Image 1 (cartoon, rainbow, N blue to C red):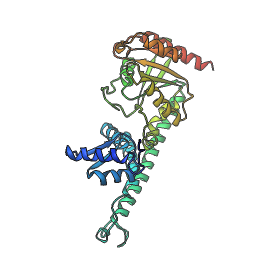
Image 2 (tube, rainbow, N blue to C red; image 1 turned 90 degrees about the vertical axis):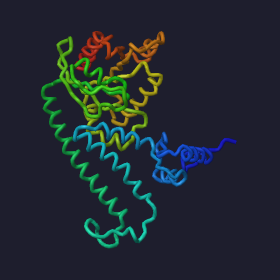
Image 3 (tube, one colour; image 1 turned 135 degrees about the horizontal axis):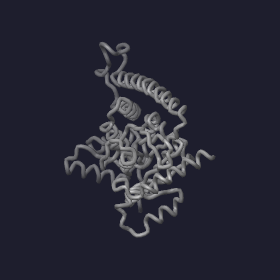
Image 4 (tube, one colour; image 1 turned 45 degrees about the vertical axis):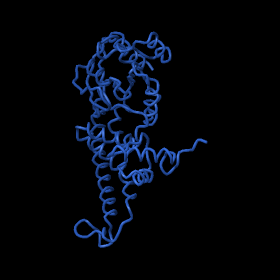
Length: 320
């Protein structure tokens, strides 16, 4: 009979024992679980294996932390990390009398080290939320000034590593970091763009999405993703050469739904057409998504049609 995953470990007992034994055999330092673990499940895995265990959310948060460069981005990542950490502090081993706090920073002889850690973490979360709130107000003021000029705003969204920043750079002449890796761009960048129809627009590049993007990360990055919320038109960039292109489209749509912008006017931009070898693949996608265009951000293929389509999309929005 087929055994079911055990709620204690999010895996069958036999498979968990096999993974733990393999980790000991190769003298592994860390076990990475490709799923989100509850704090208790993470502790149970560590008790079973005797090594550090991290889940999918922790890996994503660590990648974001490595790529955050601006103050805004660093604060947002730290907030998400602390919200992830807070419930896990309670999963520490039972506090003994030797861990009672004393000296500066404690609230009396009865406050444990665990309680101090939790209090300081909550205080830091509160401070981060307050600072991000201030930065959000500054961005809102900039957007209001921008709105008074009646300049339409376009926002690029898409799965991480779909070529969003390459496309952004190619059509605006900007120099956003472009690398073949996850989440190379975390902080939004906005540039003015003049279309062949003589329309002036503002184009924003945003953080890449991923399937099951951690909720704390979505919440923390809502300040950054306000560019998406305020946009008049979304450019959903898809790596058409990826075997998981359809799944990535659906993952992005899930995040857009969380941001309450799933119904916003959207132009599907199927990128990396220069890498496609399967005959008829591009047509299958454009038939499935009629409001779409095919381009190569790297070679410039399809740019004329793309820019022309942007002009048409904006004119149709004006006439709504």
